Image 1: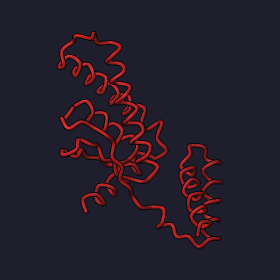
Image 2: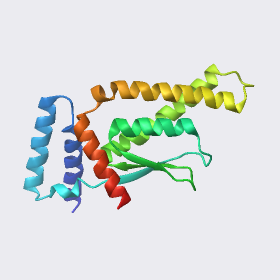
Image 3: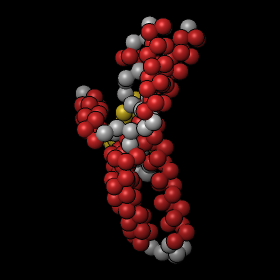
Length: 172
């Protein structure tokens, strides 16, 4: 049983690697994953499920965090919403995409907070600080939209299909 779980973990990693922009690397990873799945009689459906992961947020709605979460959602083909009771941002999608989305969201929020601490004077009003953060978040949105297709391992059509499938899964 432990060996089967170990093989499943290896197949998951190989399937993630099969999305590499390097064609040769992606092809060899996919072949190896298919060989392992055939050898151990593992079905593809065991790896195609969607997961959910929450990221800490604030109970108060903060517009710039919503902008960052929307930008990250577009980049990694995930679906998210904000839980109004806890303030958490909850991302849905394939395991690798959700992992990347949550890590990127956390990193960008910390970076924007750090930039605000460095570039805005200490005694500035709350609204001024939030305005600065919103400006940074909006610029990030623009840059991620510009460069997103170049950095993504999915083509735009596949991205929109994947987002629609995840959205349907969440709402059902």
